[in-house]
Image 1 (cartoon, helix red, strand yellow):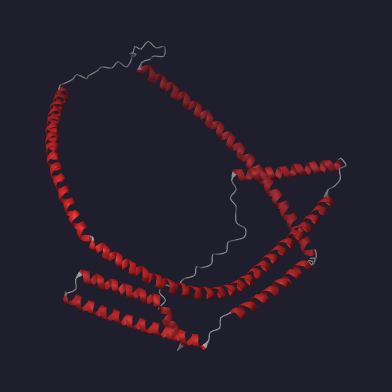
Image 2: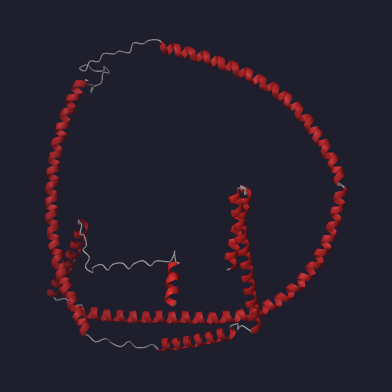
Length: 399
């Protein structure tokens, strides 16, 4: 029976959340595309390392001291500083948690004090409300008397308003006669201006319609006659342009050959850099694997426990336990009377919701019947639809 009910409920979940599938695991060794800048940068790095090693070996040959002991001491000191810093971070974290627990305890005590203050404020509010009701009744009495006085003087205001309207009507009639005269004069001036513009346009069109001789003969071998030193004819200009184009093509061929030679030299240099990089990578891989094997063989040292951190951890656990006990004491426990009131309120809410939905269904049935008969108008349909939407939203809020 449970399986059948679960199957039916799963069919009703139309908008359920769908989990995204996990991404596929990519390979660990992802190929990296090497461009020219990457190759040159890595080659310069390995070349600098080679120069440093050569310089170090030359110094050792000259009698310099090996700095491996100092490097080992420096690594140990760095490890100690790191452990000290980590313990300090852990201490700050525990102190932060401890202050958080203390803040929660303080807040719980503040809530208890606020509850007492709220009860006192409610009593004061009731007293103030009674005083406000008495004062409000006195104010309404004064306003009622004031309204009666205003209604007595309302009749005189109507007569003054009628006189003002008659005066405004007379002024409007005088202004309309003057505006009609001004409008007639403006129309006459506009007609005269329009006739003058039409005559001017006709004269311009007549001048444009007259025939003109625009033919001009050009001699390609003659100059313009500006008496300049660099002056030349169009034929000479075309010839010189042809010579310049042929010269430009020759220069482009020479430049193309130079670029190809530089490109071949660069490719050869890149191949040499790639060989150097591959050798260094193989050597670094072998050295890393050797260090990993040595690290696995070396036994791990047990980290010492700081007594201050242990004390802070114990204090934090104590504060947590105290907070939980205080929260349990301050927790409001329901009584029989409150449970009965809550159940009665829920029952009344369900009854109201059922009556509201029955009324909505009856209205929908009446609306459908009126639409079938052709009696329902657009206004009444809009009112019924708006009422149904309000009822539906009220039902959702009640749920």
